[in-house]
Image (cartoon, rainbow, N blue to C red):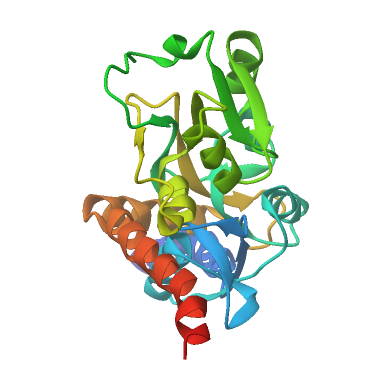
Amino acid sequence: MRCAVRLKIAALITSLLATPLAAGAAGGKCDRLIATGGADNPPFLWRDPQNPKRLIGANADLLKRIADSLELKLELLYTGDSAKAVEEVNSGRVDLLADAALSVSELERMDFVHPAITGLQVAAWVRNEPGVFYASRDDLAGQTGTRVAGQNWGRVFEGYAAEALKLDTAPSLAEAMQRLLVGETDYVLHERYSAVALAGPLGLLDDVQRLQPPVLSRGMHLAVSHDSACNSPWLRGQLAVKMTELRAAGVPEQLLADNLDRWKQQQLAPASNSQR
């Protein structure tokens, strides 16, 4: 009799312990993710020419791999520029930001997934001339630089730039590079992969060089909104696991290379079609 009672008590305890875990696992699993990001940032993300409501690019391909491996439905939607994309994720209307730059202010509204997708390198691009001396960003002091209007590289660097650098703005990277090539500016500040994507197909990188080390390096992350109904320990944990596996396999770098070529081919397509 005592043995039967003990067995019943043990079974009850096991049931009580197992129930919250099972409920947490079921409740934490999200079946559908809505994501967004900056829409004009090839090769990372840009609008699909065949479906402008959708974003494509290296980060889209990466997130699709992760979603498929977790058996999640994914929608990567165009919501506007980078600022608008951040706003949509902060509000919880969109679950995930696919190109988040880590900052203290955003940590208050999003959970950042580690490791980062890749490292962003904001570099100084100069004319391809001999005798260029450069050891650090401090060597840019006293020279005139140009950046693309609307870019923001974080409170710390923006403070440094305002104090130590002499920067004007151009409406586009193409305009900034043209100013560099004709000698109207000494250098252009722009992110490495973005510069290759935007200026490369125009032939504007043929006569310039990228200085090393970069003036700024920071990670680009996946980030889940605090107000997303999908934000759970299960999802955050799985995103971290998958990102770790993909980084170890070199997948983000390969997707960047693939999408640099994809973007270039899309830029050449209109010219090819017009010649037919």
